[in-house]
Image (cartoon, rainbow, N blue to C red):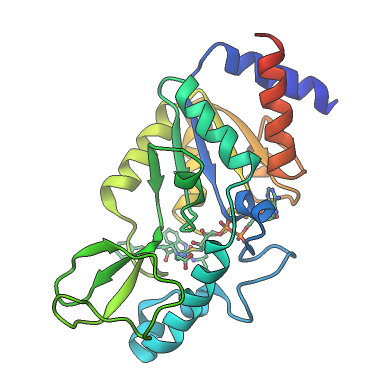
Amino acid sequence: MQEKAVREIAGLLRKKPRVAVLTGAGISAESGIPTFRGKDGLWKQFRAEDLATPEAFERDPALVWEWYDWRRGIIAGREPNAGHLILARWEDELPGFVLITQNVDGLHRRAGSKNILELHGNIWQVRCLEESTVSDNFESPFPKIPPRCPACGGLLRPNVVWFGEALPRLILEQAQAACMTAELVFVIGTSAYVQPAASLPLVAAEAGAKIVEINPDYTPLSTYADHSFHRKAGEVLVEIDTALRDAD
Ligand code: BV8
């Protein structure tokens, strides 16, 4: 039954449709990076909803930075997995391919993806609270917590979107536009819990796109999926990509 679905999806991809992909923490799970809400562990004992907020940072910037510094340390030691690499290749092969991610770990970029809409920012960037300048920062661990802007001494924050903060408007608009025009949308490794990201696949479904969900668990999006693979992203993407090449 799933082989048939794999072949059908490979057949669709062969026609080079407009493809949009929405990824969440689950696509990095096979790289050894904890997810937020899946059974395979949380980020230490903290819930994102408790620390990924401006109020938590205001209250205790050092604690929030210790959490991000610890997460950066874990991510720094990990590599992109087969799922990330296949999506990077599909971007090269499929005109109009758009990758939308909720992840801040930077693994899609390290896998070779170029046109990435990072809805929630990037854990490898910092923003100066005084000057609002954003810069890359790969120090791991930070020599000093909380880190300060080398230019003005202002407090730095992670350049990520916290709960209660608006997503970058242009990036969200580009993601919405991609979902409105996509013919095939893959929803990979997200619990579809966090908004407004979780609504993007619904925008695509309402506009007539075929939805493929890849997640070992059921999610609120599963009922909208034309194909649901309740298995690991790396495995399913390899099967679809192999079927796609078999026809070459
Ligand atoms: C905003 C920060 C408004 C960076 C994160 C409706 C509309 C708008 C807002 C809301 C709304 N309803 C509620 C809200 C408020 C809120 C929200 O969604 N709250 C939740 C708790 C209900 N949303 C917001 O606050 C957003 N802001 O809308 O602001 C606004 C407008 C104008 C002006 C001012 C304000 C901001 C949301 C962004 C929050 N920041 N992170 C960081 O530290 O990481 S979100 C956090 O959750 C992560 O970034 C993560 O990306 C995101 C989603 O989690 P997932 O990626 O899905 O990960 P999860 O662990 O949940 O699931 C993993 C899945 O993978 C599981 O299903 C598992 O089964 C699966 N899996 C496991 N292994 C594998 C696998 N799948 C495949 N293969 C495997 N091997």
